[in-house]
Length: 480
Image: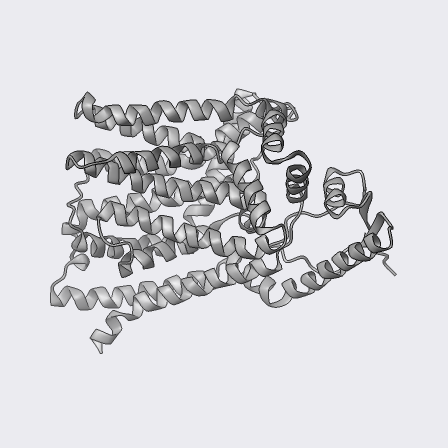
């Protein structure tokens, strides 16, 4: 009985996490393009790929990699079918990059069951804690920019660990170094939050390697210099200057400091009180201890490193929100907060893992003796049940499930009716169209933006250009 119960916690945690991820994947079938999607694909088709991206760089954004991924994805997968594929692709790459990072850290196979389980839980906790799934996972501009940054960050951490190991073991490292250069360039070009994180991580790595001599530190200095150059390309782009000029309260230091502190405390309180994060935190030591026993690498964690990790985790909501407040003079977009949340969850769970490695010998429940094994199984079973309960009561998961079951299909039918009206208008050479507003409740998990009643609105203009119309708008519903 006890032997059977041994696999119960892992199975229950894995099954519940996979169900949640499946809900997010299925919702992608009902998402529809909006806002910048039509502007980007129309601009690329009219101007050409590189000319349009250059125009984007000069007049809107310096995110050279994020903009490129955005345009390439729409060109390759299309503006319609691409929406259905995007959540699957991004969730899979998040799982894969997490597994790569953990595999590199513990030097175990990427398909190790504990690695797979930890990756699944991590992605579930992250997605279910995001402030706005619609703009961060189901809108191509936000999803491809911000989730690709997260994927590159995890991949970069894994490559940094592997590069360090090869340096210590005096093995060939040209391949890993080239891969790391590529990931650094791409990651910095996604968005400014990731840019800041990458530069700080490379600076810390360089300072750490410097204590072992200049010969080992020189590669890390090259990476640091490269990161500064790429950051300058993003930060000093004319497009960023143009965009910042539209925010009247920008560049007010004390206003930005006060805003980031207030919002930092609020978001930190929300994140730390999340039952899903709490249960994941309590389960993390068991998973880390399991990987440590399988690992061929002895990870030594110092008290100073623990202090740095704790300070870093708790400061993330404040430090990473300040640049947005400085540039915009107001609350950052939800997708930016979600990007900061990703860094927080990663640093928080890494801190828990480091604490486990540092003090595992002092915790009896982590021991492998027969008496401790039985207690551990019972505790893990209770933890797994609490994990499922935290998922079942998570507001984002409940909203996503409700949208999938009740709201997504009616919204899908409405959008198909709109596309039919557009096709009929084009066939009849009626180039100015007014479509009815949606009368139902929007599936907020996937609904991000739409055309307005004013045909002159930029969203409407891009929408109309894509479908070959002179103008399009929504008419107000009549209430009887």
